[in-house]
Length: 430
Ligand code: GDP
Ligand code: IMO
Ligand code: MG
Image (cartoon, rainbow, N blue to C red; front, side):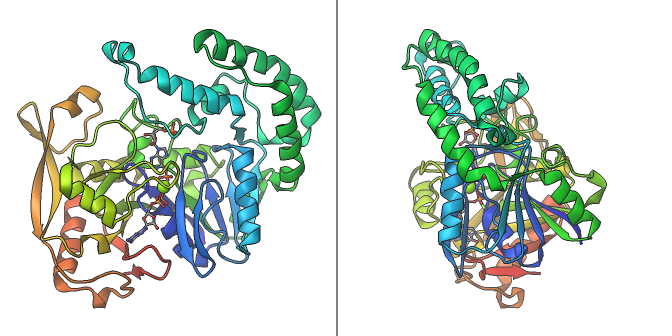
C-alpha cells in the first residue's frame, strides 16, 4: 500500500535497476518519472540479464503495470527496441507510456552531439566552458524544446499526419541551426516522416493517459514503486551544475514527472554504492586514480551501461550522501555492491571536506569550491572474506556488519537493504 521511491543517491549507476527488480515482487505499479535513455538500468533474474533504458525494471514480474511518466523524454526508436526485447524475452509486466511524455527527435540527438563537440573546443575552455560528457542521446535538447514549447509529445504519435505538418516548420529551424551554427549536415524531412509513421504504428497501443492509471492504482490502495533515473548529484537544480543531466532526478521530479499527490509518498529510499562512481565530467571529491581505480573498475565492471565509457571511481562520500538524504527526505539507504569490497585491506569513507583550509561537512553548491575541496577520510578494516551472493544478514561476517553500522551512524539513517551481487537473489532485507 502507498508509494515508495527508489532514488539514486550518488552520480547514477548505483544499482537502482537491480533493487527495483527485487522490490517489484510486491508492487502493482512501477513508474519512471524523469530522464530518458541516458539511463541504463541492469537487471538479472530468471529471464536473463537486461539493460533497460526506458522501460521500468518491474517488467520482470507478472501483473505489474510499468509506467513511463510524463516527466521522461522518450526516443521512440529505443522504446520500440526495448518493448520488442521485453516481448521476445517473455518478461511478463505490462507497459504504458504517458501521452504527455516528450519525444526525443533525431535532430535532438544531432544537436546534443554538436553542442558537446563545441563545448570541448579549446576556445570554449578558455572562456570557462567545458564539455559535460553527455550520453549523446538528445536528452538536453529534448527537454530544452519542452521548455520553449516546440516539443512533440507521445500523444502526437496518435495523429501522425498532423505531427508531420508541424515537423516541416520545426525541422526548417533546426536545420538552420545545424547548418549555420555548426556547419553540419542537415536532416532529411522524408526520413523523419518515415520514422514517425513507423513509431506511430508500433507504439499506438502503449500511449495512454497514465495519470488515470496512477490515480486508479492509488484509489485501489495498490503498492506503487517510483524508479529514479540518474542520481541526486546529477539533478539539474541540486546536482553539480553544469555537470548534470537536464531533469530533476530528485523526489521533486517524481511529483511533477508523474502527477503525484506528494502526501501519498510513504517512503523515500536512496540507493548508494559502497564506493562512488561517476561517468562524464564534473566534480568528484573522493575520486581515486591510477592502478587502484583501474583494479576496482575491472573487478566491478564499472563501464557505462548506456555508452560503455569507463566510470570514474572514488571512495564513499558521506558528505555528499548526507546532502542527498537531506534534500530528498530519505528514510533509508539501500547499500549496493558490498561484495566488491570483499578483498580490500582497508575501506575509506569521506566524512568531511577541507575547503580553502577550512573543515566543513556541507556539500558545496559552487563549482569553484569543488576545485579546492580536499576529502578527509575515516579508515575502516576490510573483512577479507566473501560476502557475494549472501542473502541473509546473519550470514555476514562481523567486520562487514561493523562497517554497515558505522555507515549508518555517519550518514544518519538506517540501511535496510544490502546488495551482494548483480542477481535479484543476491539481496539482504534487514
Ligand atoms: P543503475 O543505473 O542504478 O540501475 O545501475 P547500472 O545497472 O547502470 O549499474 C550497476 C551495475 O552494478 C550493473 O552492472 C549491475 O548488474 C551491478 N550490480 C548491482 N548491484 C550489485 C551488487 O550488489 N554487486 C555487484 N557485484 N554488482 C551489482
Ligand atoms: P542511470 O539512470 C550515470 C550523466 C552523463 C553526463 C551527464 C549529462 O543509469 O543511473 P545527459 O546525456 O543526461 O545530458 O548527460 O549525466 N548521466 C548519467 N550517468 N548514470 C546515468 O543514468 C546517467 N544519465 C546521465 O554521463 O555526465
Ligand atoms: Mg545506469
